[in-house]
Each structure stands twice: as structure tokens, then as C-alpha cells.
Length: 241
Ligand code: SAM
Image (cartoon, rainbow, N blue to C red; front, top):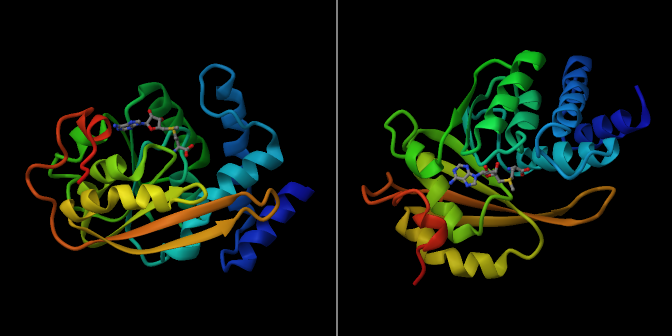
């Protein structure tokens, strides 16, 4: 095992997430596919191996430091792009039933290929806008945990994500440093969508030291019929008051 892999393994083991050789091989294969497909389509600006392991893989798994993924059954990732954070989480917690929603079909094709190559089962990759998919009975008010990383500001993002969360479930928004202004802006949207802010966890990436925040919001009731509004509206006219 080389130094990048050794560091990745020990950093996660320190946080109570031990990885088997097979799981490490899955991360390595994921890295190779990401770089290979990135030459044909725009998946990521980060391709240097150590950086991918820290800024994409490790960063994705930090969600599990604050939400109990070992007992969760279902997780939805809205606007997953090249698979973050859901695929690293699925590799670490193979019992999870994962649903990925992304509006760009090329990325969905990539994600399906990654799942086949890595032997990841129970991952459904759905092509569509979250506003439309979140209205389907199969996906509405149904997931234990819903997450999104780098998709939109929290006010609009809440309308894309909270409709997927079951009553009593969790919406975990993965944010960069200093999310306070976004949080203040999103207060009304969160309440209107039947969420309740639980807490904001902050961390630093261990090597690069950049700051991250994970906003944890609990769903208190089913989603009101009016939401989500028509595709495009939540991000263009977020619920503000
Ligand atoms: N979550 C990934 C990450 O952290 O690297 C990708 C972030 S990328 C900046 C945003 C992704 O959200 C894109 O893949 C885009 O296609 C998707 N997206 C944007 N709006 C969406 C919507 N309304 N419904 C579904 N996917 C959406």
C-alpha cells in the first residue's frame, strides 16, 4: 500500500471507520475511473491523486463523523455530480441503499459505470431535476438521510432536498467555511419545508486544513403539497422572508 492510501486508511480508522483491503481497492478503482472519464467529460477540477483522496473521498466520508450511517438504511444524494458524497459513503457503509439524483445524464452514465465496476449494489442513479423527482411518491418523504455537497445556497437547496427526507429523518448539507450567512438566509425555507436546524458541525481537512461545515437539519413533518415548486423556481426564487 502506498503513502496516499496508508494515510487515507489511518485517517478514517482514527474516526472509527476501518477499511478492508477490498474497500481500499474500490477507492483506488474509483480514482482511476474518475481521472479516465474526466478526459472525456467535465467531472472534477481535482485530479492529483492525494488531492482526490482528501478533497473528494475523505471530505465525503466526514458526513459519517456526525450522522450515524451504520444504522441508516437509505440515503439520497441530490446533485451528486461525480458521486460525492454518496459513493465514498456507500463504499464505507455497504449496507446503505443509495439513491443519486442528478440533472446531467452524462454524469448519471458515469455513476452507473462506476457502480458496475466497483461491484456496488443497491445504488439507484436517477436522471432528473430534484424538483421533479422529489414529487414522485417513490422518493418523497422516504429517506433516512438526504445530503448534498456543492449544489446551491442553503435556502434553495432545502427545497431540493427536504422533500426527500422522511419524517424524523435528517438533511445533512455539506458546506464550506462560515455557513452562518446562508443559514440566516435559509431560516424561513427550512421551517416552511418542515425542517428544524439541529446543529452545525465544523471541521478541517487533515492535510490541506481547509474548513468545512456540515449543517444538520431534522425533518419534523411530511412535506406540504406546495413543495417543491416547479423545476428552476427553488434556486431562482428561494423561499425567503
Ligand atoms: N455533489 C458533487 C460534488 O460535491 O462534487 C457535485 C457538485 S456539482 C457543482 C453540482 C451538481 O448538481 C451537478 O452535477 C448538477 O448537474 C447537479 N444539479 C444542479 N441542479 C440540480 C437539480 N435541480 N436537480 C438535480 N441535480 C442538480
